Image 1 (cartoon, rainbow, N blue to C red):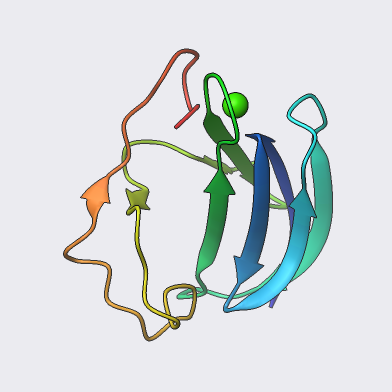
Image 2: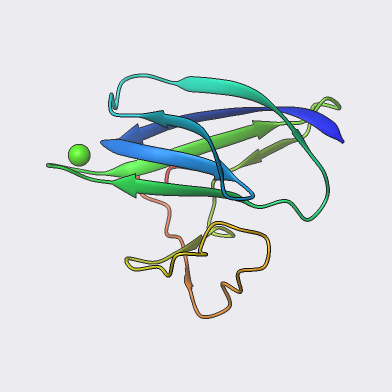
Length: 108
Ligand SMILES: [Ca+2]
């Protein structure tokens, strides 16, 4: 296990999961929230983001102990609908679209 720092800022509301476990949530688009969490290769970080009004977007940054940063990017998968198991390791997201970057780099 490796302890990472997961930070998120979402316009407007979100719930962030690691392997289906809720680890962060919020409803203030101006606030960055962070949590330290133990992960291992193959773990899934998933975020449910909801835009209530105006522009919307989500930014997630995962900081590893060696300085590596894994931020939201076009490598992340997105969908407007999801089955109940969408946020666990066994879920196959092959049919989901890649995220698009909107505005600043790494804002999806
Ligand atoms: Ca919004």
